[in-house]
Length: 338
Image 1 (cartoon, rainbow, N blue to C red):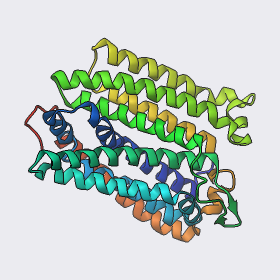
Image 2 (cartoon, rainbow, N blue to C red):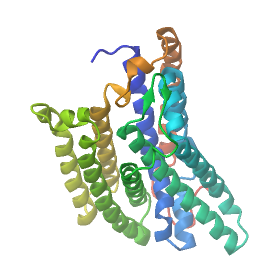
Image 3 (cartoon, rainbow, N blue to C red):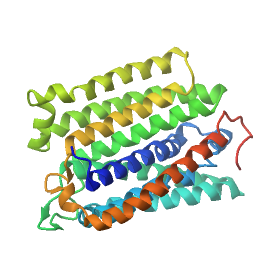
Image 4 (cartoon, rainbow, N blue to C red):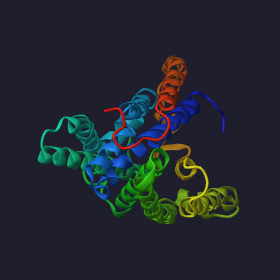
């Protein structure tokens, strides 16, 4: 694989999307887990674990979407019409969730607080479901004629996309539970570990189900994953998924080891799923019709934007790391940003 500008942009966008999944994943996961923590004090503590950093997490989503528009405009022009309902649902859910995050603290009545809690839960769950279904739509293939989307309004709604959406919801719930295990103590931490075990089982089941269905979506996927001798090269991904799954299960059930370990192992599972997605799709940006090279902007445009990205991305990354470092450590009831 030659590391030209197009490949460099693809790797940069993949990095931005993965960082978004890492950071906003556990953030959305807290909202998904909200129904299982009905006490107001517990919900206050859950929000306070991410209150100082939550709005910065979505910077990476903006970077991913803006980078796709700038570096691969053809892909942007095809993917959005194919997924408009999902993208609109996701953005509205994130808006509701963000507004609920701020207004919940200013609620003066139980009904008002309950309403904002419902908005936070619903926004988190819908956003996660829409993101998973968007991924499933891209993976199952988008109908393209020439340089335009040629499918229907409901092509994004299939059993496979629903499966991907549910799997992402479960995965975000796992990240949220592992984050709570890292940031809290006492009874809420114990409940978070219990929820992490449940969400972990659902996440692994989702990974297995999606992985089993993917090779049968496209002939290229089947040949990439199951044909001999290529299967020997890609087998490392499912093997590592199995190893991390067992390690995560042990860390959540034994009660031993550092509290950060389950969170890191959960992130490792997401990284392996991301690697598996890359194995399936490369070199296409829209399987099976449009490659990265076909969708790329002119080289001069890519170079101009890449220079800016090389400057800005490390700054954003450094700020993000600094923010999490400043607000590190565990929280107690009654403590927090609000």
